Every structure is written in C-alpha cells, then in structure tokens.
Image 1 (spheres, one colour):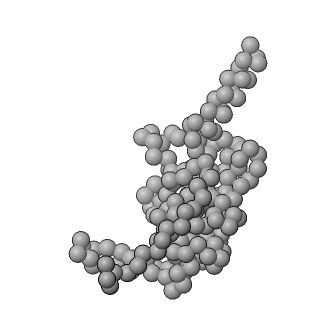
Image 2 (tube, helix red, strand yellow; image 1 turned 135 degrees about the horizontal axis):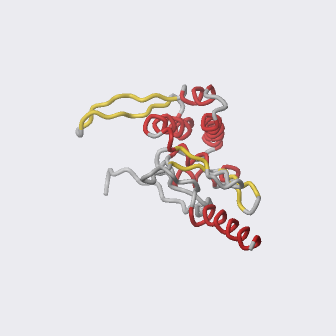
Image 3 (tube, one colour; image 1 turned 45 degrees about the horizontal axis):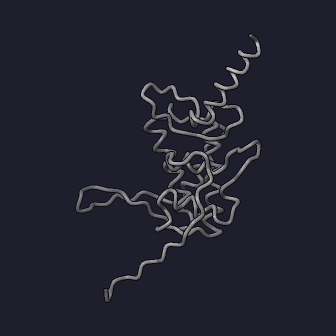
Length: 187
C-alpha cells in the first residue's frame, strides 16, 4: 500500500532454552540465569540471548537487543536480585532513575506511558518497575524455588499460596523422588 510504513522483517530467533518462562517481567529477568545439570547457564551471555528475552516478553518491537541494552539488563537483573534477597534496594533505585511513568488520557480513558531519556534503559527499567508492582500486589507471593540446586524465581499464583517449586514436573518431582528413594533405602 503506498504511503504505509514498511514493517521490519521478523528475524528468526533461536528458541528460549530456559526451563521456566512466562513469569512476570522482573522474575523472568532473574530467570535468565539458571542451573542445568549442575552448570550455571546465563541467557544474557549468549549473543542471541537478549533478543530471545526481549521477544519472549513482547518487547522486541519496541527495543533493540544491542550491547548497551544488554548492559542495562545485567544491571537491572543484579538490582532485582539484591532486592529479592533483601541485600539492598539502592541499585534498584538507581535503575528506576532512568525512566518515569507519564499519565496520559487516551480514547479508552486514563492511562500511563513509560518514558526514558535513554531508550537502552527501557527493558531494564520496565523490569525494575514490574518488581515494584509485584511488591504492591503480592509481596508474599514472590518466591525462590525450594529445590536446593535451583536458582529460579516465580510468582506463586496457587489458590492457597503454598507453591514451593518452580515446576512440579522438574524440581518438585526431584524432591519427591529423592524422598521416595530415601524411604526405600531405609526399608
């Protein structure tokens, strides 16, 4: 169609290798580092990793997966991790300095829009802001997997708030299998 903006062709991305995806943005950023077969893996160390993470979170149309954005994501991941572990909030505040929420009025009614002086801070800032939203909505539901070898985080959305593992199929099953093995050995 004449005059219509040309859309960017979609570049095929490698599949997301992480064992847990789909968590809220802040926790999904934390889950870019995980342990697999006793080895720590990091999605953000791979050249395609930032693009995979942006695409997994629907941010690939708004932000570029360049070196500067990667550096900002790493800063935000460390800041969110420190806040989750209760070892400090200063770094999270530093990330939040790079953006703001601007109230808007749209055809649908009142709204908000995130603004950044430097767009490379966009994904990192959005993840940090999401952590604040999680603290407002459900601070007691932000969890680390109870399996001692797992480093993943999740938002417990179970009805009774008793979820302990990132995945019942993996970590939960490992714990149950090891308990069963221990009981069998004793018998």
